[in-house]
Amino acid sequence: MRAPAVVLLSGGLDSATVAAIARRDGFDVHALSFRYGQRHAVELDAAAKVAADQGIADHRIVDIDLRAFGGSALTDDTIAVPKNRPIAAETVIPVTYVPARNTIFLSFGLAFAEVLGARDLFVGVNALDYSGYPDCRPEYLAAFEAMAQLATKAGVEGNGVRLHAPLLSLTKADIIRTGTDLGIDYAATVSCYDPDPAGRACGACDACQLRRKGFADAGIADPTRYA
Amino acid sequence: MRAPAVVLLSGGLDSATVAAIARRDGFDVHALSFRYGQRHAVELDAAAKVAADQGIADHRIVDIDLRAFGGSALTDDTIAVPKNRPIAAETVIPVTYVPARNTIFLSFGLAFAEVLGARDLFVGVNALDYSGYPDCRPEYLAAFEAMAQLATKAGVEGNGVRLHAPLLSLTKADIIRTGTDLGIDYAATVSCYDPDPAGRACGACDACQLRRKGFADAGIADPTRYA
Image (cartoon, each protein chain N blue to C red):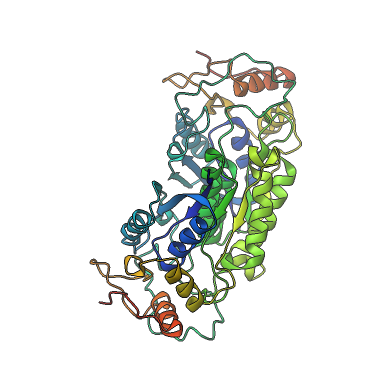
């Protein structure tokens, strides 16, 4: 019998790959997505499609309103998503950073894991091609895991949650190669921060640039629908 | 000018006291409450009253649906709230424990603090008369603070959030004495896990027992409306 695991599934390329990795590694995947006021809520349709493609029967979408706080281009329509900027030389944290978003998402993942009796929580963060977000760094993830060990009933009983970030040290090209080998249809995924209403990618935001370069570097045809 | 601080405000006795302490200590209090599917949602009316009593202009209520996971007597109507049980000799974590609740609440508090530019986050957890919840222990709070330092843009820039739990080592009687000295009208607060529709306390759940004993030990008249 497969052990249950929670996978945070955004509908993007990275988390689709993580779900496939968790399945490959023998876990019964329970997927968790968030409707958090993101301007690219079309990614939730992508998440549902990814879950269906991978045969994930338990996919929950939790509503949380991060627009109550704003503070990010992704949750505040008055802040524009940067386009066509150089992403190689990252020096400041971009305005697409959503305050404490990964901490909030992982906290819900921790709650879901505890209720399921799951000891494993997967997240698709990546420290290499990652846009410079503080909550994608290895030291942050280690600190979250240490906190999680103390946070729950399961943790007190010695069954704390293990946090898995299998993409942490991979390039976008590595991720795409891994997922392609696992049979992922990346056409179903949406990475763009600012897609059009039909879900077509802008091709110019940081996420689009990283994704496009990833397919090029991997030598794999890019199936993304661009506007 | 007062520095901004976020205070998690449940509408109970403890968090009302914490808000008053934060004000006493010179902070401009921004209060944060959660409509999380709790069976005692009447506490949110109490939170609004407490905020108004204390002149807190910014009180936000965030909707999050912990019933999507359940797993607690507070978020699942099929699990009964224990009544009239001895609370002195705590050996197991009670069914009123909500999986990862404090982690989720503190994560939202962290997001709110970052957006406000606040460096201080107050929470009313208490390790003494605390019902045995894992996420009320000092070691848990220390681990959350360590994680929070790494989680945010502010943290990366050296302005991480300080987590304050001023009630951590106080007895319920100490808390009541402190708040009474600060002018809190505890009649506005609701501690009961299972109040009637009019907001009157059951008098028999763990929270009611701890509260009643606190007033008795403090030698202060208990203003609670019991059913």
